[in-house]
Length: 335
Ligand code: FAD
Ligand code: EPU
Image (cartoon, rainbow, N blue to C red; front, side, top):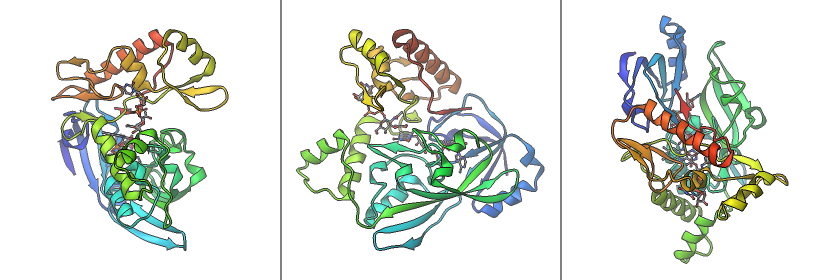
């Protein structure tokens, strides 16, 4: 147990706040041990890679850092492999293990920061794939009952950057492991235009999952700031879904506005386009601002306060509503 611990190296925004109590768990039994202590009655925050959190103040309670490691194959058929991965494993390291073994399904999710246990939390997604496409089940520790429960795919209630763990069961569980179903006979998904362009430029006509993974890595490196160099938490807002009628009204004023079909009546609009078109891209306010290549990413250049970044996010929300009558929802967990 550590007291008044700086969390600067535990969040990719690099915000320097303190946790009153900080404890790292390496085994499920460590959670049981922690539970016997009085400190467990404090408000709790489960922390993994810290790549989807903005701290706006010190955490006046117990931070439980999930470092439960290990992975192994639990079942194999002619076509599929079921692999159980503990929550504390690094997500991208797991993807690389899959790519090396030619187990298909997660290659489009290469280079997403964070840990495996958090991947179902908000159904991570990129380049045409979401975790729900390869998810089999997970185990999670019920904080009050001190028992491990298993969740099937449907029990997780996956949605766009959503699951039951962010809604009805928020704060009730610590995810301890995830089982993925991967394909031993992979079929690549190159539906995302940017992947196709990279592969065409390399004259790759029948790509392997390694080719797809490499393409995704190169696209991500060209667009998104590396948190080791510039503090950020990826997309700060979700891409909003609006009615087609609303979109057609906007199109009259904004000829270049982009959209993706969602249903007969709804479309998704890239928040990056809205923020960029509203003139925020690359704007800097001292030591924080909006990234120059991706308007959806707010950045900490050097020792910014989380509260300042949060205020900027609120200013952007108000401006976007004023210009397009669209409510932007924050994707990052603000604490
Ligand atoms: P944390 O930030 O540590 O935690 C996130 C939330 O989950 C918190 O509320 C925390 O309390 C809770 N939590 C953490 N661990 C557990 C657990 N074991 N049990 C229960 N609750 C838990 N996301 C995408 O979906 N697609 C992308 O393409 C993408 N790109 C990104 C690019 C960059 C540069 C960055 C910095 C982030 C990006 N993200 C992306 C967001 C982020 O990587 C994901 O949300 C990731 O899954 C967060 O994992 P983490 O381990 O860092 O979670
Ligand atoms: N755009 C702009 N200006 C910008 C940024 C984007 O005009 O500054 C336009 C682009 O031209 C493009 C569209 O917006 O037409 C979409 O941009 P991009 O392909 O970069 O994707 P995104 O919608 O901004 C989403 C996810 C990312 C994920 C990528 C790739 C959300 C909130 N974000 O970003 O996830 O990596 O698609 O699939 O859904 C994350 O969740 O943290 C994250 C990075």
